[in-house]
Length: 92
Image (cartoon, rainbow, N blue to C red; front, side, top):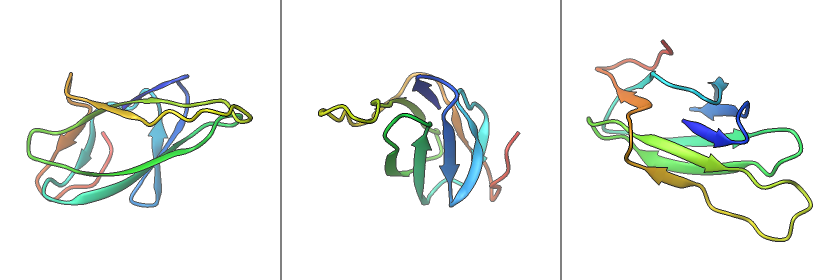
């Protein structure tokens, strides 16, 4: 998980999971997760994603508050920052 700018809080499963860049966070595959990325002075970005056994990678572009245009976050397939784990939801 990366964000522009970096240092954003990442909330997954309603728990603070860390700050960006966030790599190696383990989640159980086969489920849909809700994720929110936020940083003071920027609009929060929320999405849900389905985690497959191959993992997931996200790059979120946060927009400053007060701007008129919002940009949706982009999910990319490069790298594997959300790794699939067998029955585990712990950070490493």
